[in-house]
Image 1 (cartoon, each protein chain N blue to C red):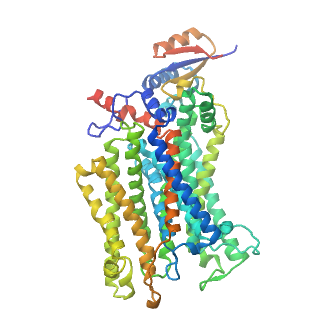
Image 2 (cartoon, each protein chain N blue to C red):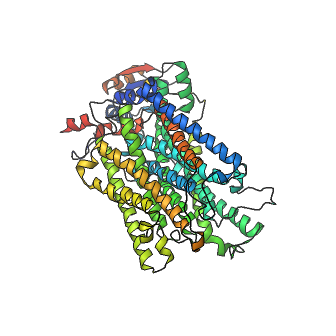
Image 3 (cartoon, each protein chain N blue to C red):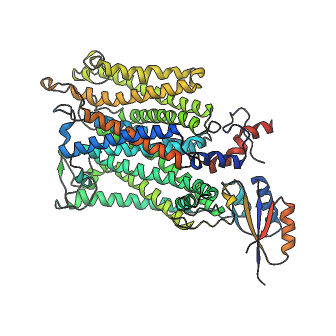
Length: 172
Length: 460
C-alpha cells in the first residue's frame, strides 16, 4: 500500500505549532515543514534531532590551529631560519609568542568557512540550485506542513482542518 | 503563547504590521524605481570614485613620490585612512555578532545594513596598504607562497603580516556571515518577484533556499557559532592594527594601552557610520517603523560608552606622557607639546570631536533626536580621522633627532584617493540599498509577536 502526502497551509505560527503537536500526538508522520522564519519550539515539536554542525566547526577549528602551527614552524624555523632584528627564529619554543595572532586567525578562518561550506552542502544550497518550497507564500507569511498517511486521507484532512489549516491539498 | 515581553521594553516594530507587511516594506525599495535623489547621490559618488581611481592610477604609474610623504613622515594620510576605514568596519560585526550573543533584539532592524557597511568599509581599508606598497603587482608577496626568491617566506614575527591575516579573515568571515543571513531574504524576494529577470537573479542569489525545518535549525546554529567566532575576531582585528604601532619604538606609538583603546575607538567610529547611514536610509527607504528612535538611542548609548573608553585612554596617555619625565614624550600626540605646538589645531579638533561633543549624549533629549544624533555622528567621523592623523603624523613629525623635525602637507593625490574611497564606499552602499533586502526580514518576523507595537498593545 502506497502512502499519500497531504500539504496543509497555515497562516499563523502559533496555530501551526499547536497543529504540529496535535499531529504528533495522533501519531501522524510529518515529512517536512516549510516556514518563512525560524519558529521557536517547532523542531522540538516535530521531534527533530539536534544539528551537529557546531561540532564540525570545532573540529575544523582544531585543524586550522594545527595547520597554522605547522605552516609557521615550517616556514620560519625549518625551511629558512633567519635572524630578524636580533631575534633569531631557530626554535619553535622561542618563536611561538609571535605566532599566536596568526594561530588564532587561522583557527577562526577554518572553523567559520568550513562550517558554512558544510552547512551549504548538507542543506543543498548553492548558486543555480532550484528552490523546492512547494508554495511561494512560504517565504512570505504562510507555513506549510507535509504529512504522510497510509490509510484514510479524508480523516487526515478533517483533522488538519479542525486544527486550523487554511488550505489542504494532496501532493502530486 | 510564549511571546511575552516585558511591557516596559519599547516596541521595536511600530505600526500595525503583519508578517506580510514586513515582506512588502522590505521589498519595496528593491521592487520600486530609483528616484531622482538616488541618481543624484549615485552620480556624485561615482564621480568621486572615478576621481579616486585616476589618482590611484597616477600613483601607481609615477610612484609614491606623488604623495606628500617625506623622509621623516613616511606614513600619513594613507595609513590614517586605512585605520579610519578599518575602524568604521568594526560596527557591523559587532552589531550582528556581539549583540546576538547578548540576545539584543534591537540588532535585527539594523544588522543587515551595518554588516554591509562593514564589508564596504573594509574594502576601502584594504586598498591603502596595497597602494602604499608602491609596486602593487608584487602585492602577493604578503602571502605565504613559495616564490621566485628561493622561497624566502614572509616574516611571521611582523605585526604588518598579522594584519594581512587578520583583515582577510575578518573580511571573508564577515562576508559569509552576511551572506548566510541574506539567503532567506533573497528567497523572499525571489518568490515575490514578478519580472522573470528579477526572479532569475534572486533565484541564483538565494542558493535555492526553501525554508525547510532542518535548514532553519542549521541556519540558527550556524549563525550562533559564527557570532561566537566573530566576536573575538572583531576584537583581534583592531588589536592587531594597533600593534602595527605599539610594537615599534617611536615615542607615542610604543604604548601598551593601544589594543583596547583602538578597539573601543573602532566601535565608536563604526557606530557613528551606522548612525549616519541609517538615519538617512530610514527616511529615504520608508523604514521608519523598523529603524526607530529606540534603535538610534541604543546606538548612541554604545557611542557614549566607547567614547568614554577612548576619552579615558586619552587622559591616561596624556598623564603617563607627562609622568614619564621623558623629554621625547613631550612631543607625542597626547602631550602639552602637541597641544601648544605646530599641530595644536589637529590636537584640539581631536579633543573637541571625540571627547567633548559626544558627552552631550548623556542628555536623553539630545540622544533621542535624529538631527543631533546625525550631527554627533559626523563630528565623530572627523574626530576619529584626526585621532589617527595625530597618532601617525604628530608622533612622526617630532622624532629623536631634532634636525629632522618637519611638517606634513598632503598633495592633491593624497586628498583625491581619500575622496575616491568615500565615493567607492557610497557607490557600493547606494547599489546595496536598491538591490538587497536592507532589513533581515526573516529574523524580524520572528520577533514581531514579542516586540511589535500592535502585539504589545494587544497584551495590555
